[in-house]
Length: 133
Image (tube, rainbow, N blue to C red):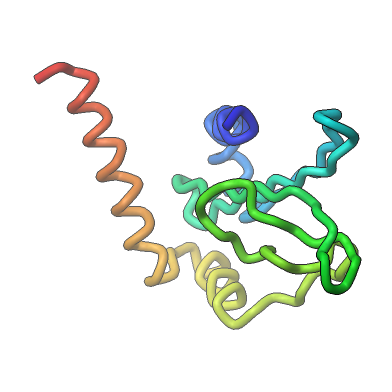
């Protein structure tokens, strides 16, 4: 999807800098004209500074409640799936608070290590595949 490619390029250019500035999540809302004006929301999470999780949503009308809700545009369902688009942001959860406490102590939250290892492994495999050996 072109939106994901664009977001990954932005992350490549500014992800580490955003992590240094303590930005662990950012989002953008786009109004695109494809068969009528449609609202899209892209949410990017980068808790470790080296990982990038992208969730892309389209705002659609819920047939039961008749209000606009987020519908995942990818095969992976994100945390905003089914949430009304006009709802307020949730306060920090317990894991987010632990991320923040670890960051203030200049360390990494223990549950971020599997995600960091996964990213390193994917990069290693991509490097191996591109070298042709």
